[in-house]
Image 1: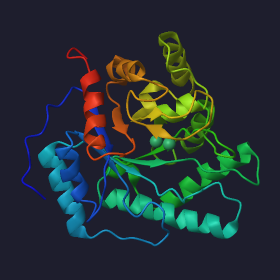
Image 2: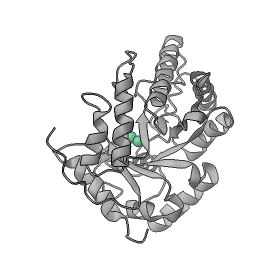
Image 3: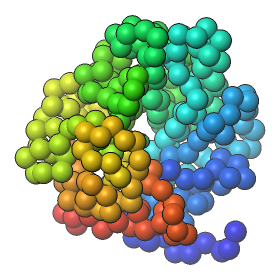
Image 4: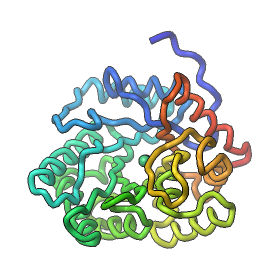
Length: 297
Ligand SMILES: [Zn+2]
Ligand SMILES: [Zn+2]
């Protein structure tokens, strides 16, 4: 790696981007800092492979050292995309449970703050049964591991709502959280692209206000620990889960400005999961978010 440049100015909000772990998870910390982040999200293993993966002690120590050095908080881990805890296929469910158990173990080893999980696909059963099964599987995966002591919270992410995916409404996310209350530390991650294409209005000022009120009544704004800040390629209500660069999609810049400056959300982290179409897109998206934060916020 070239010698580190001076980090760009930070803001009063925790802003980061999903960062590559190529060459080892600990390398993501240095990369995030170079991109101007003060928060980061990573995969702790290959996102589309089942192979069990164990982290070395030195990797975890190095991650902690670099996070301390660069003030990177929180560390968010995104679960592998293959995991479906609502699966009705016994073999697939078994693999998903083993894989998610591995995710929890690695999150604990890395001293991560949050582990983000999509609630799964309920193909083959009804939605309610899917939510019940997902909650039960999360509880099973966490058994015997002390998440509270390690300050690790599992975040259930809302989804775009295509086909059989669970979690397209705030109520569905809230139901999983309610079922795990007192069992394992849980809260929510809300994705702007998913919220928009699932049909909620976050584009107009009144629409955003109403959507946040609704979010507060169902999940609770204080429970939204992470906002995935993604613009969208699809129209509102299209259920199309395609992320776009900040300000360049069907959501536009203003909704992100409102979220980033809302005092009720000042404790949340804002993490982009935007595409990299051209070199430097990651840095540009982080900067786009940082520029929206008002000096007084
Ligand atoms: Zn997301
Ligand atoms: Zn998405």
